[in-house]
Figure 1 (tube, protein in one colour):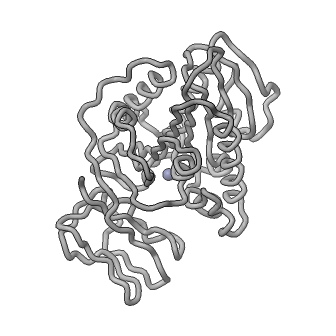
Figure 2 (cartoon, rainbow, N blue to C red):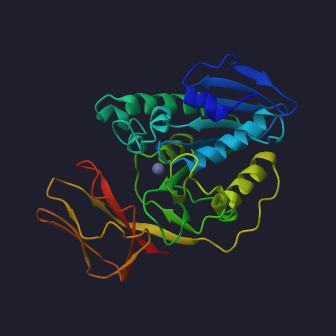
Figure 3 (tube, rainbow, N blue to C red):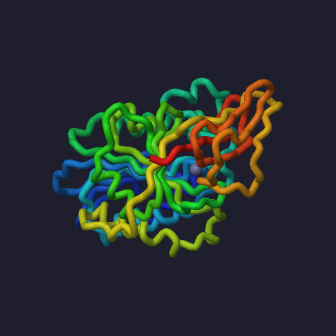
Length: 321
Ligand SMILES: [Zn+2]
C-alpha cells in the first residue's frame, strides 16, 4: 500500500514511481511532489500543498489522508492534481524551516537569500508548478496552500489571499467558507508567498489557508479540521461541499509592520492573538525613528512576530471590509 507521508519523510526514491487505479494515473515527480491525473478529461487544475513550514503538521496529516485515499482508488478525482509537501527536511525535524523562511522566497525571491535547503526547494517548487501549470489547457486553476498559525486567533481558521489585478471569483471565495474559514484577508501588494507566485504567474485562484495552531505530528486534534477535510474531499471528487456556518468576515491589509533594524520593538505581548483589535493612534511598534501607529478607527493585527530577520514582515494590520 502506498503511503504518501511516510514515503516523503523516509527521504528515499520510492520503489514504484508511477501507477494507476480505476480513477486515475499517478506519478512521483520528486520528494514530496506527486502528480495525479484522472482517466477522464477534465477542465480543472488544482495544486494542493502543505508543509511549506515544517512544524505545521495538521494540514500535512489531512493532505496525506486525502492522497492515500486517492492512491488507493477510494476517492474519485475531478481535477488534474499536483500535491506538494513543501519542505520535507523541515518536516523531518519539526522546524518551521532549517535556515530561512521559504514562504518569503517565491517569485524568484530565493535568489536574494543565502543559498540553503529552502532556496533550493523554493526554486524546485517553482519549477514543478511551471511544468504542471504551463502545460495546462484547463480554464480553472486553483491553488490551496495549507498552514497553521504560530499564535492563537480570534478566527481559528482563516484564509490569506494574494493581491491580484482581476477580482476573485465568488464561487472560489464561497468554497473557502464551506471549507470552514471564518475570515478572509486580502493582500494589497505582492509578496514572496507560494500562493502569490501561483496567482501571479499562472493566474491561479490561490489562498493560503491557516488552520488552527501549530502542533507536532500526532498531537493534532484533527476533529477541528474535519470540515476543511470534508470540503477538500468533496472538491476532489466533484461533489457539493458541506454548508458554510456563515459568511467569512472580509479584511484587507491596511499596513505592514517591518523589522528594519536590531532596535525594533513590537508593543504587543507574546500572547496577543491574531485579529486582536487596536484603536486609532495606538503605538504598535518602533524601530529607531520609525513609528508604526494605527491609522484607521480600528485595525486588527495578524501574524505579529518581532523575531523575524531584519527586512522582513513583523506583522500586518488589517481593516475590516
Ligand atoms: Zn505557515
